[in-house]
Image 1: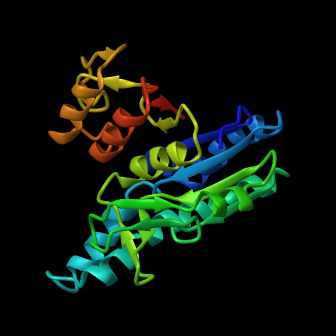
Image 2: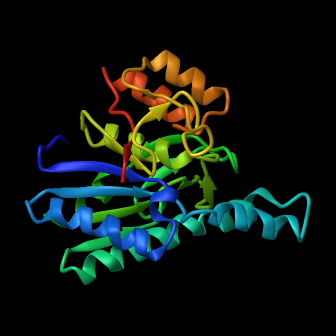
Length: 235
């Protein structure tokens, strides 16, 4: 499937850190939808939600069962998707939130670091409101036993790019709280410089070495399917 009236956008946790942030994102999306465009939105958990959930686990056990660990961590993205859907509906925009499982994202059985094997795009297309938003919880899927799995920290990038590829789109838009890719985190290093152009090989190396720009697996997917990748944009 490919359509000029369909786009995929991913919003990171810093862009959804508070309910005010979520309303701001809803304002952006509502403007797009009012032009007749349908948007598949992939969301991360709000702010530090995932870290807070991990701290809760650490206070109970040092060796949490993988199944329960993933079931817990997946809730952060579900909260974001439901709240953003509510914010859009409040503005008169047709919106619906889905978990990774409801969106038909099938993964390997490995908990904490699963890989996407298949996406049932019919489930996405059937639930996508025309001129509205389908909000999908990133970072998660479901294995053959119907258990929730997660894709590793930063995995919402991979969710978004995999969905865009499955839908036959030529572009996936990534939004965060920083305008583009920098030589260092500009929130920490004030002299960091914005990079105007970067190759897949360079961004993959940055991601693999710990940069939080994009999830390494998302870059690998994009390398195979796209000739170029739009640099992250400030939401």
